[in-house]
Structure formats: C-alpha cells, structure tokens
Amino acid sequence: MNWRVTLADLAYTSEEEQAVLEVVKNRWLTMGKETETFEREFVDCVGSKYAVAVSNGTVALHLACLSLGIGPGDEVVVPALSFVASSNSVLHTGAKVRFVDIQSLNELNISPAKIEAAITPETKAIMVMHYGGYPCRMDAILEIAERHNLAVIEDAAHAHGAALHGKNLGCWGDVGCFSFFSNKNLATGEGGMLVTDREDIAEKVRLLRSHGMTSLTWDRHKGRSYNYDVIDLGFNYRIDEIRSALGRVQLKKLGNHNRRRKEITEEYWEHLRHLGLGLPFENYAGESSHHIFPILLPDDVDRMGFIKKMHTEGIQTSIHYTPIHHFQYYRERYPEVNLPLTEEAASREVTLPLYPSMRDEDVRLVIDTVRATLTSMT
Ligand SMILES: *Cc1c(COP(=O)(O)O)cnc(C)c1O
Image (cartoon, rainbow, N blue to C red; front, side):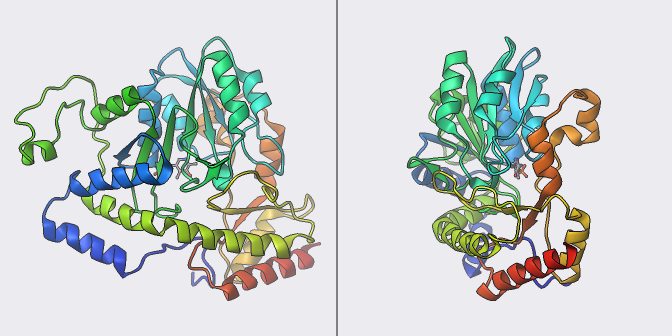
C-alpha cells in the first residue's frame, strides 16, 4: 500500500545515521559508554534519581514488577485499555491482574475510584498507563496507594517528556517504564528505560538486567573489575550501544518533536470539534507528549467502514486498543471482567496519523478526509 499519510513515521535525520556509524567505528557494541551516557542524560531529562536502560519497554515493566517483589499470590491493578504488555509483565511474575475501567469517554486513563474498588488483601501494586501521553490522575492514585500501602508502577511507554504539575510522568510512582519501540516518541527500534528514585530498585534492576552478575563485560574491559559473582536469578535484558546512541540523539530532539505533535493535535481538535466525534483529552491537565491522536466515532458510524474508507483515500489509521480482557488468552483466564466505559471507548475509537514530520498539508488532508468520510456515512 502506498499511503498518502501513514499512521506514524520515524523522525530520523543524518544525525541518527552518524551516531550509529560512530558506534561501529568505536568497536564496542554492547552496554558501554553510550549506554551509561544515555542513562545519565535520561535522568537529566525526566528528573528521576536513577535510569536503567534495557532491551525494550516490556522487560522494563517485567523488571519493575520483580524489583517490587511481586510474585505468585499477589495481585496488581492494571488498566484494560492498554497494550497487552502492561498486564503480561505482571502475569510473567506469577501474580494475577485486576482490570480496572477508565475514568470517562473523555479521559481514557484508569479511574482512581475504580482502582480503590478493585483493591483486595492480595493487591501489591497499582499499574497505570498514561494513554497517549496524557497524565493519569496521579495525586489521587498516589494517595490511594499510600493509604493501602501499595507500590505504583507507571507504564510511560506513551509519555516521554510528558509532565503533570511540573513533574515528569514516570517519576510519580515507585518505578516508571519507557519504551523506545519504532513508533514511540523516542524511537530506537527496540529499547526501553526504567526510572526510579529508589536505590534498592535501581540496584536490583541492574543486577537482573544482566544475569544477576556483579560486574559487566564493560567494567572488566575498563579494568574496573576482573571477575564476577552471580547473586540473583537474572536475565539478558540488556540494550546495545547502537540503540543507546540512537536514543541519545532522539532524546535531544524530544522537546521539539513533542512541540510539533502538540501543534498537530491542536489543529486536529480545532477542526474536528463540531463533527459529532468524541475528542478525548481535549481539556486535559498537565503537559502531554501527544503520542497518538484518538477519536471516538459517533455511535451510529460503522468503524470498520470508516477505517476502510480512510484507507481507500490513502490514510492509515489504527485502533488503541482492543481491551486486554477481550483477547482469547485473557478471556480464558479472566472471563468475568466487565468494564462498560473501556468497552464502549474501545469499540468506537480510531487513531489518526500523528508524527513530528507530518506536513501541514498532511494534517489538512486527514481533517478533510475525516469530515468527508463522516458526511458520507451519516
Ligand atoms: C509500546 C508499549 C509497551 C511495550 O514496549 P516494547 O518496547 O514494545 O516492549 C508497553 N506498554 C504500552 C502502553 C506500549 O505502548
């Protein structure tokens, strides 16, 4: 398919190409100087005490759960309107999830009141996901967590550079997890970052990231260490130098990219406002990273018909998300889940193209095509 406007696009220039070449020339490919620097620069950007780079966002979430001691017999409260990795990471520890509904059709983030209602004696943690980079109600969520003595994990895969009351998303809970998958605001192909203010968590995650070993190949190369012990049952969840170098370039550009995403989002809101669509987050609190642009179609518009007509006009759209509890694997294990708002939002949602290199005429084309498509269908 030759799309006229794709859903997302990499915001890469010759800077990224140059960064990769430098790593190749320097002949050190796995975790080393680039990764250490990337972690330091990430800390400077988000304002956490620690940042640990890992191979993707999913393992960041897995390590977040493990470092908080979550395991068999425990429960974690999770959003159902998220990518499946959020809840998979909990199940991989042997714990169970409790799916919670969203706040409203306008605010597609997890509802604090419904979190509280889902807490049981087995609950160990609350996981939130900042949909599209729009902040969850962190004040209320932290207050609930404190009252029930629960940990808070932020799935910040959409939220690079987003903030609430001046504090970056990812830094509100005990642990924040970022993804650098190709379509994210900061893209390295595969890659992720775990941030925390807690030294015990940072230490545990560094160990688990690399086989529970007390020193890295890099430390031995630098003469900092000659041998290692293995003191935990770890994984190979490491990132490599090429991706860290890409991440450093992308981090530098993040502010500009997010500003362009915001401009496009506001253009969409302005011109799509009176078409009978739901425009979630239009009056959100905080500073979003505007990762994706969701709309909710009117009740009487057939979604697949709409998506196909957009496709015919050369415009790629997507759906965020099929609720996790609707997937077969989860249906079999969590048959009782019933989340009316999540299910309604998920059944009407369509995601429009949004990426920093979108030209003004691309944005106008999407707006005009949405308008014409809706008119032809109602
Ligand atoms: C992308 C994403 C992840 C997973 O990140 P990967 O780097 O692809 O493993 C997790 N949660 C959400 C909400 C995501 O969008």
